[in-house]
Image (cartoon, rainbow, N blue to C red; front, side):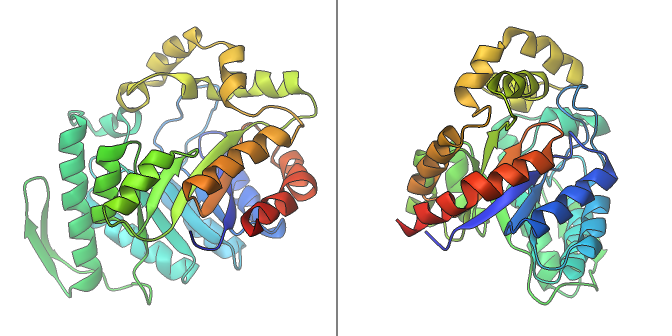
Length: 324
């Protein structure tokens, strides 16, 4: 495991564009090593209320911050936007952020990708599409001009002139053994949620190198009941089983599905309230699993309150965990 980096989620689904930039600045001022911003066309539920275009937000963050690393966690590079366009978007963002940009990718969710009218394929096809997309993107970053006639994508005489000094790292998301092996073959690192110890093990056994990014979701508030209410209102979909979070196509479908999720279900899996103990326990498990880029998603609007909690109750304890 590499040196521990600690980050903050900037949730595109919960905040307007200018607020996302404010939270990035807040994170830098609070001493976080990096921020991770989501790439969505829709929020999961309408109560969340937002979903701006991530590439515009990244440009604004590049000018509002000075040193903090910025990651996208994660984009789907296959359906909604052609990989040749994403190759240009990532390269431009890499220039603006000057060595502090990291790009996470995954096989996507129907919620965001169905909007262009393409069929939502099964995982096996989506994995093939991602493999071809990443290959095309890497060629566009390394070759003077690219023409490609592939199974899923066509590129003709494409050339990207503005590029960072070093290619932006591509960190590949995985949620199980099969996708972990794919991440090992395609990526410069692994993106997971929680501890996911077996996924990390498979990634390393398959030859995967580079950092392991993981998000821990929580809801800090001055009372446990307030935190549970907020988490249930905004993030109940996290309790949906199986592949529903990849396959449900609209906010309406999610809103129908989360009627089955109770506040008690959310509170059992998501640390809620002012007690740092459950957060530190979850962090300890993630570090033991091999995570070295650990970032925290504070559900809800009170990012300033969480940052104060982070500074007083979490930061030093987390650094001590790594030292131990």
